[in-house]
Image (cartoon, rainbow over all chains, first blue to last red; front, side, top):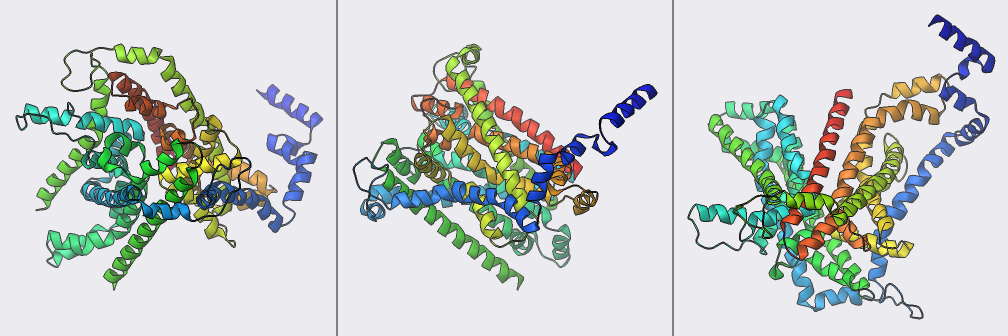
Length: 328
Length: 261
């Protein structure tokens, strides 16, 4: 040991000065690196620019770029442009949306479905989040929450397929009902708005559960106790304290779930039927055929994005107003 | 009253657990059915579907394709996301809010719209549909999640450590590599596992940006459109096992990270 250490020291003393022994020491005294470092850190301003240029370029070109390009394509009459053909600016793609009920019916259906499914998700997950945050000891809480997270790691397609098996004519639900003697012939759950709803609530529940849980967890227990001491019943306590105090979680959960539900493509295709065509399928239709349909598809995607944005913003405004009204 | 509430709520909780677990359990079980026909009751059992899938080159190729896409896109997302997080956290500059807004944008766009926008943009950039396009779209889509996780971790870094390093003569880059980066490692690991999961499970972007070669979710979707069969159950179970493995691994990391901080 002693020999080793002293030998290394000797070698170190011969080869390099004491401060240069580590990798980092060597790096910082390496001439090209020193030149680079002093160039990059000459002033805080230069340092900041070097740090900021790449992220700013990235978000502009990669995050905003696709949306802007989609908007641009939606205002042209042909994309991709065939050689020798001139591209013209036009609003026709947007106008065609209002011209045919085959287009705007799925659009409104999507928005109504998304709204209804979001509400269902809220109703289903609120008691679960409430139970986890208020009735479970902190030690078990993580465990019980984790139990719910596991199925949500599984992908969209696999979970949609699982719902198909659950609700099919020879599926588990129909089998149980028949076994109990409640029905003679299977109830056709599949390919209806019901099966779509079950699937979409299944896929989005976690995005509602987590915001609700975190806002319920923050709520101090003492407030409820104080209200109980003052003679408020369980329902009054819930309505006057718990619900207003968790509006923030409700608002962010609903926004998230609404945005996600409007964007599902595979789930409506697999679980829905001809009477439940959603706008995502309409949009996708324009991209299966190559060529001149793209601008229309882009325009429809823009319409849908703006509508979803408008609804969620209005909803959040409403929730903020409700929150302020309560604290006054 | 409270007691009743408690019992009622715990029933609701366990009913919800059943709702999220039972469909998956049924799906795995159905893969053991000795028949071409999906449906209950299951009268005879077999392992053939599972052994068949494990020997099926189409499934294995799709599986490998999905995994390589997930790994590649995660590498990109993590590098870019960490960089953006370092720029945004704890710094005040003109336009910061706008950059933050643009950063989280891809995570907020509904799936189908993001897929369409990426499809159009890939065409504009000249990226052919296929692996490159899928990797690119997954990378962009997952950046916001990395940024949020890394920013959260970065905000708990004691500033004094950086200052001490600087006082001892480290330049900003060395201070970053020796102090900040090791501190961020748990967050980066957590974020990358999350990205792996998102990419591996993603359908809509892979579907619209893919070429002829299908990723695993796209393969399952294509097979489902031509009819249900226990073979699909076996393939879906392979995907499910993969996600469960990554997920459990992720859980270990997040727990370690919470312990650290």
